[in-house]
Length: 443
Image (cartoon, rainbow, N blue to C red; front, side):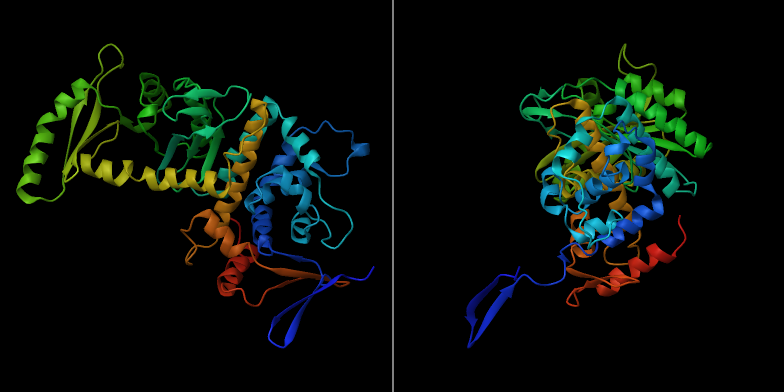
């Protein structure tokens, strides 16, 4: 059948003629980098080898590893919904990344096939997936760190309709899930656990921490570990667990009348100094404190008293760490905003991990872990960009710069050619990262 032609008469005396007769073209030519990252770390191969597959092999057209690659790579490329598979199943770059001939007639899986994969997941599948993601951390970080900081945080994921274990949360003023996310001090992901929307205390968090710390101790027996988080994790149960696990903690502490009374002289001192200088004043100290009948013993509480033109700001942090109060607060506690909150932004904004729209809770947990796997691959791609202008960018910028490249695909007897557009402005950076991923030794 002849290709359809359309003419546009708006370039002076010449006409533009559009015709669909070019070799297959994709807008995601840079996805080759992400496939090479996965080849180095072996994440999706490990996931597919671990997950149970109950399908009758006589009728299986798409192997499990292919389904996982299609879904996770699609998320990394910005196609977060299974519905996107309807239009992307013929994309030559995505087919090549899933180890198919990009110019063959065999297409990738359809949306119903990927949806069945997610909705058939149960507790066992989710546990196995989470364990592989945790194990991947140690594969990708073979060297023992001087200190490991585990950043804890929860984030709100709005829910809609009759989703299992969704609940109204007064703080967010909507129905939500509350995923628990655990990163290291550099923003690498160790765990993503979907929690119901109704707060359950820190019991579930402690259970997850016990498994992670036990695995860390197995890998690095004497590495110092610090648990860092906001006031939502400051509770007697957490303090006791940290002592049993032999780890330190640095946790925000909500104010109460006793703490405010203790901080009042410091706050007044900061206010007087501000009135003299008209410049922002920050004063730090620490004290021993124990909540009556609740805490097993007294702990050190850091106090920051700040005063500026908009008024006073007093903060409390409970810790088992030694050192000057200001150094602990500014040099360790405040850094969680960079390491953890920016990482959550990448996971939710760039990789759309809040698109948990399945009815079943375990299907949503499974989907959260798929998005987490995409985060791990993008994190490793950013690590490969060290020393370049992309080493600290957010993941949506990383995707735009490195993956979203126009490419034309051609095939010969010996090679499949990816002709990337010559107008791509970051060719030198892309080539440098590609050489690192292909030639540098793992780890």
